[in-house]
Structure formats: structure tokens, C-alpha cells
Image (cartoon, rainbow, N blue to C red; front, side):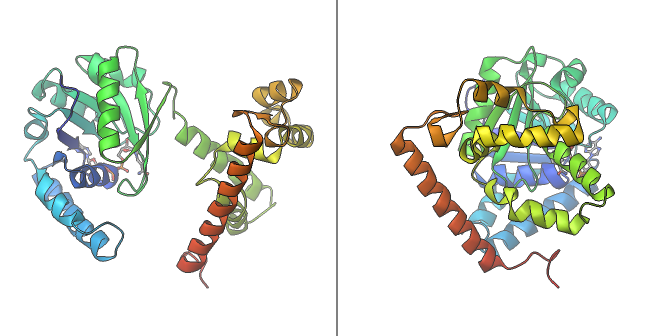
Length: 322
Ligand SMILES: NC(=O)c1ccc[n+]([C@@H]2O[C@H](COP(=O)([O-])OP(=O)(O)OC[C@H]3O[C@@H](n4cnc5c(N)ncnc54)[C@H](O)[C@@H]3O)[C@@H](O)[C@H]2O)c1
């Protein structure tokens, strides 16, 4: 297996597989798609070319994007033809283990034994899927987000057998495709969906309790803490808010909602050590020198001001527009 992956097959060219194929082709990788049957593959191929042209015409992608996609995206008559001699194969068929199992059987029978095999599964851990593949040392999760042509982050999850070389080659490919890969451990739903589903679950409770309507709740999320999320994750946000403040707030939350909303262990430990976040220079992100603190505040203010400008320029989403 070479460290540089140049040829890619995407099996399952629907919403996610199609977007992954399009964006990898636009990065100059040689990409072949295969879907259920030749007719669906052709339909998806046409859709991806049209979409690429539209993205470019609308100024959402740089000049030359559609040409690159046209030059580097191919379709195959079958899964077997698509995966033959490819360096990397990414599976993006439905989130149904038996469907993935049947597809892996076909891929493994036709692909090179050293071809890297990735899955775009949203929730299934590697250890539940690895028994379906031959040479599990080349198998891992490469989880793109929706819509794949635009969202930069990709979760990478290795299984027990996955080699360092495989993970490293995938990381190199993602960099080449301007993606931000984050390697996380092999648990159901990994990080992204575990957090996203926790938010939806609590949101559902809030609506059912009559605290807010779905649209009021969505307004609160996107205009308050959601406004910070393009720039900072929950640990950085806690550092900026004040860990001691968070700890005090958790007392109320725990009293009202019980153990499931109890004070987080890591937060309690930090406060016990006297770390109150940015304000006293010690937090989840280590020590904050006065210079680092000033740079962070300046970055945050600029980021939020720019985001506000962007939102004003875009206007309300069709979900909110009167
Ligand atoms: N939709 C999302 O937001 C999202 C985000 C990240 C990951 N994922 C994951 O990506 C995977 C695909 O999801 P999607 O949203 O693209 O679904 P989708 O239904 O849009 O696409 C699945 C594609 O697989 C094809 N397919 C089904 N059986 C096949 C087979 N036997 N051989 C070849 N192709 C076959 C279908 O025709 C379809 O085009 C799932 O594992 C899903 O959990 C989805």
C-alpha cells in the first residue's frame, strides 16, 4: 500500500457518497462511483455533474470546480468494476448492517487486498463491521458530514486491527482534499452524532414539557450558544464563560433534572484545582498568559462580529422567513 492515495471508489452514490465523490474529484483525485445498479449510478453521476456546475455558477465553489469534477469523476457498471485496483474505497450505503455486510463481501472479493476500505457510517462502531471484511487491518471509519461538498470536518475511527499506516494515508488524503480530520475512539455514534443526538433528545424533552415550541427552541439555539459553535467547542466555551460559574449553574440544573444533568466530572475536577478558565488563567485549554487571553478575546470578538455581518447579508433562512 502506498502512502499516497490517488484512486478512489465510492460505493453508494446517494446523498453522502455523491457529495464525497464530488468533493474528492474536485481535489484532483481520480474517483469512480457505483450505486445499486447502472441506472442509479448514471442518475447520481449526472446529478453530481449538474450540481458541481450549479455550485460554481452560484459562486459557492471556485472557478474550475465543475471542470475538475468532470475530469476526475467516473462511473462504473458495478461495484466490482468500481473498486478494482483502487487505492481507497469508501462505502456510503444505507445505515443497515446487513446491507453494508453484503456490499463489503462484494468489495472484498474484487478489490486489492491492500486497498483501504472506509465506511461513512454515522453510528456503527468499527468492531461491529470489521468481521464483515477481509484484511481488517485496512478497514476504518471515515465519517464525512452532510452536505459533504461544504462541511470540512471528518471523523476517523480505527478498529483494533487498523494499522497506523492506513490511518496516516487517510489523514494525508483528507488534508489534500482540504478536510479537517479528527481521530476519535470506537464507540457507537463516535463524537459528532452522540453530541448531536444528545442535543436533539433534550430539545425534544423541552418541547414536550411545553417550555418552548420547536421554532422558539431553534431560535434560542442558533442565536445564543449555537452562534459560538463555528469557532469554539464546549470546553473552550466553558473556559471563556468561567468554570466556577458553570459549576454553580450545574447545582441548579442537577437539582431540577437529576443525575443525567449532574455536574460533569471533568468540570468538578478543574474547579477543585482552582481552575476557573480564562479569567484566572487556568482552564481546559491549560494556562492562559495575558497575551493569549487578549488574543483569544480579540479573535472571539472579531469572529462574532463577522458572523453577525454574514447572517445579516444572508437574511433569514427559508424556515424563518415570513
Ligand atoms: N444523511 C446524512 O446526513 C449522513 C451524514 C453522515 C453519514 N451518513 C451515513 O452515510 C451512509 C449513506 O447515507 P446517505 O444519507 O448518503 O443515504 P442515501 O440513501 O442518500 O444513499 C445511499 C445510497 O446507497 C445506495 N445503495 C443501497 N444499497 C446499495 C447496494 N447494495 N450497493 C450499492 N449501492 C447501494 C442507494 O441507492 C443510495 O444511492 C449511511 O451509513 C449514513 O448513516 C449520512
